[in-house]
Length: 488
Image (cartoon, rainbow, N blue to C red; front, top):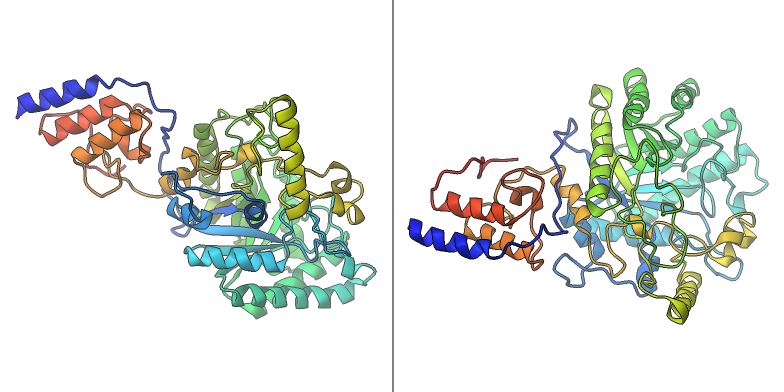
């Protein structure tokens, strides 16, 4: 028997390949909240599919992206909702053209794949953020008292429509990055009135659904504490204090934990990161400038990870861990922002005439289907920003899929960060046997996708032929120095 094993090991060692670039190492987090949200915002996905984008599974087969996300550990989908992101002729403003109808489609597909839905109401016709909180066109000129009535009606009617389409709504976000205002109201008192009216509508819709409020710039610690106090002082009813956290803008992870612990400790609220993301490369793939590139947002004290799929996974794990560390076990979860907003046409390998032709084709798709961040039609609503700088995806290099729609190894972070794995069980079948050694060999030859966390038998941070050899020795009952067949 030992002679046979020796022959097998010798054969394996002849396959001394370099470490596979697909290898991914993710350490499990012992979550304090058993229902910790591992979420993703894919609001643009319908417009991408309408533009001809196809998504695939790890084996290269065309697949429903919702199924792929669910199988990789994502348990919640976030979708933004704009009131009426269309001009008078019915042309979409872009950014996914995310109205209630689009939310219905996304919500149903999420539920069909066992994922809950967070409905992110912007209460605007297009992007809402700290500098833009414009009221919907149909709400312009209304008094705050009238807005209280209409925001409640709109919220409850929209939620019922999304639910009736088949969505499993678990959370509702009242406004998006509302530091500077909400639906065209900018005073503390008037913002609070709208928060409360919308929140009452959510309670009327379903008292079990969690209500989230959302701010950004958590690096400004005292400002975040101010917002938590403000909500309490105005008796705003909500469950979750949520922030955006992009490490190239928003400070350290330790500060993030501190900021989120304040409403958790003082007011008993859950805390959450509603948006985060990180680049897996600095290469652009669609011809539209990216938020993170070799020219911008690619350096700083809080960018602790490489711009690789491994670095992307490390950032996600780190942010989840920071939220998990929120005091009183109130860390509720993390949503990754637009993890599928890939190129509608890959420009990364093109130059000259070919590049120009592909870019022009992309522009037509962005305009026709709203699959870029903004279309020229948005000029009627946002002339100073979207109407000037419209174009494609600024985060195609921060997605979990490459430009051809195949998932990157980093996508597995949502599964690996939560699940116990059996050391050595590289094919995820619940046993450690010769099939696992074979899977590692194929992986080293770039022929097979495996569970890299389990396959890294000796814990050196890499999946190599050495790991396959250790498994073979284990099967042959030759003593090894690793805790094979133990949970990791």
